[in-house]
Length: 356
Image (cartoon, rainbow, N blue to C red):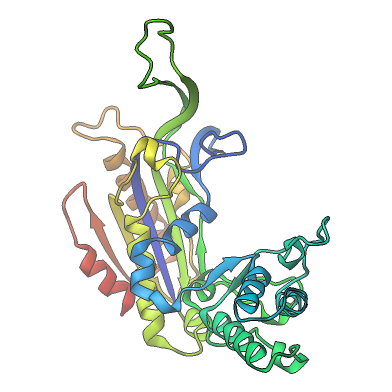
């Protein structure tokens, strides 16, 4: 049934700082002995799942990642007329289902209503919490253990089904991810540059102080990135309780987001929005494989008439794919591609191909 869907993307970003390290500079990685730009899979997945495109396509089926379930429950209980002390006790019981609470230093703090571990909850679980809260308010009583079975194995939200869930305190409700996303990496070496910038005070006429009101510095670099996504369609359908139609919608929405949506880092400063310039989609039951080895040696465009990094990267990717097929046999049963450099293929055709 074409169990695996593999997506290979080449996306070029102008000078930008899409994904920062602990010092605020663009993330990097060594590959083939050269420094490359890197965008973490966490950054990519968050940009896609929180994008307007993904949210509109799957609206009521998108979950929430939070530590604040206890705080939310407390605020709803108090708003419903429950006194603060019992509201806090009941909210702690609800939050405790999803993980251990933080320890508050101050007695009156709400910190101990926060869960130590960031938890991904589905829309169904949020509805179960709200339903329980409404019952507790109307009956003015403490929740019983049977009512606190708020976690569900089935009926998961699409982002949990895609990217998985791990609950250290409730491992029975862990969800194996149906989608793997590699860190995007530039196909060529990079040198991170520094942008020295100033800001001027609009009310300073310069008569006494002609200097800048603010001085700052930020790192940036431009790059053509290779990205790889692998989706296990069978596992996705299983995670969604057998809903094949919803799985199909999810695959289309995720891939369209991957093609169109960039990470959010420093967008106001750099305006580095870009669509993928090349996308290869493959499907089949064969063991998946990335084509990142095509860029173990950095691409170069010198000596190729009319070529650039984009053309050279597509050639390298195509050559690596053909070589793997020659050695291992066909690594996919069918494929579809769009190539903006050549003006070939359409996104509509690509999305139809992956969803079928």
